[in-house]
Image (cartoon, rainbow, N blue to C red; front, side, top):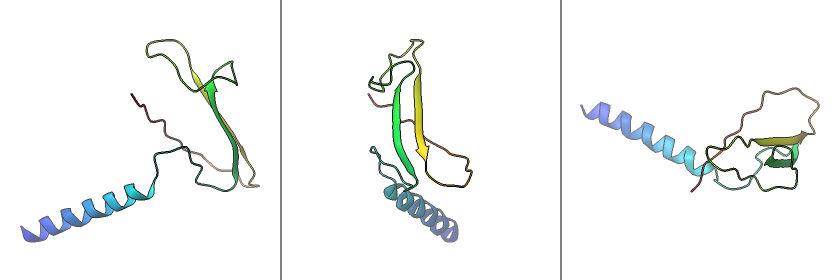
Length: 80
């Protein structure tokens, strides 16, 4: 029982430690990514805000200055 509790505590500590490394702010984690833009589709000068339930969509674009080909991932965080 103690071994299971220690294992769970270790897993939770590692997860919490990793979560502290990622900042929830406007930040690019790769030096090869430039000119990140997030805006309402059709209006590059708009703020990245849409009404819930509307048909509006957001568009994310950026410049990858690397000569390699990559599969990119991103996350949107819904804030009230």
